[in-house]
Length: 363
Length: 239
Figure 1 (cartoon, rainbow over the protein chains, first blue to last red):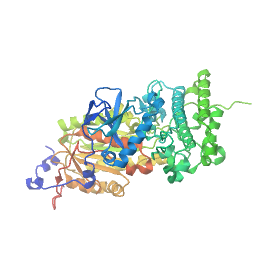
Figure 2: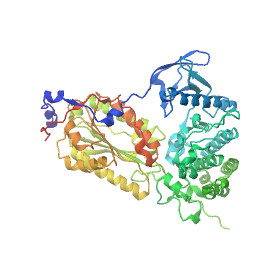
Figure 3: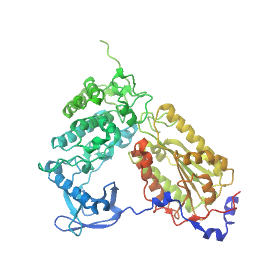
């Protein structure tokens, strides 16, 4: 027996009996979370049994359960905080009804959109059923090593197709006056075929049903993908989001997909993405006196000039003036053009996730 | 090794902020048998689950230091997915040179943070996870001071876990910052602990660096023995 072990046996029994609780920091992490088994009811009154062990996720607003009887669907149940507050519960019901009324969204296979409400034993709406989406979050494309690990064999052509699919999805929603508020990469799932599914749809801005109902707002956002006017004037979160703000956020995400996670305002000697964004200095405009982080020019050099111009219009001219932000349709056309260029090119760098620097063509 | 990493295992093509994590694992002779098997199994599960998560795998950079007989770097700082491809095999052996291990961890952490600064890579608050079942038999107090101070200043997430009835909580109290203080592992629930650690690191990695302190960590009841740990000894001290 080692000396240190021998010492253990010198501990007196009396000392062992005296015990003190662990710190409040640990005790606070042991508080009940509200997770539990539940029996809920579908609109026909049929009971559905949800198991605590089937909880997949829980956010600020509810718990997401697997639906034991059908693996293609999930159930989101509101937290007690919402259900026990009549104002919150009523707001939840109104929003859910407005979402259920948008039939095109309900049928779209790229949205985890609510399909039907679920009820408690008192016939009170407590949540909804939605399709289960599969795939990796967008973060799987946010570094070259991530692409290689989670999507082996993919090159820039595949990731650009993902970007195009995302643009198409956001554009379709915008046509229905549904605005994506939170461009958190965890809200977009990509499967092995490059299909994008938008989850957490109840964080979207939903138009009211009919003229009497106001737009349903949400305050959720992820700062590094958020239009600068919202970051500088947080009171704007109480107002409706605008299509221009969505265009900005979408362009940030698309740029990051194409550039393996590099933020459009990332700069040599810069700080974290939010501070860089707040600086307003995008290194794509050389006149601003900031440079891309070391090594990243190689990736930028293979983007078509017209696509770079699109990003300059968005991130430089559209930074302070939302009306100068180019349309989603223009971004779509640029991505389609880029895909065509990559398809036709015989230069392997054109498609590479980490290309060599492009040689400047002699005029 | 990651194709994009430099010789120091730092992948400069990964733009994500990094979360450096050091696991300080007691592999002294008293850990031999089932405790070590459970620890190894929990560690492998942690490596697999963390590297399989697209959020944590971008940010978590791990180093594993063992202390059993001597303090050694079992896996040098690297992206967690690289270590998951070749997890270290833990072996129980010798006494408990915790002071030596703390000194090593302190210098490794400083070097890694210097490297992030040189390369302009943003980083989260580092995490130190210390797991021990006994009492150190070297000078640990001076070695512990630097990391304890960082923990007290809120610049380090420092978690100290006592394993089994013989874990020396008096020493842990001296080593660790006041918050959150030591906690005891429930039985040999290493897997449950490492699952919690994976979830915690996922949450941190998904957060904004400036808001990492607002991240709410998960419930600990599956692995933490919250009923109490031995009361502080008044005069008694491990030599």
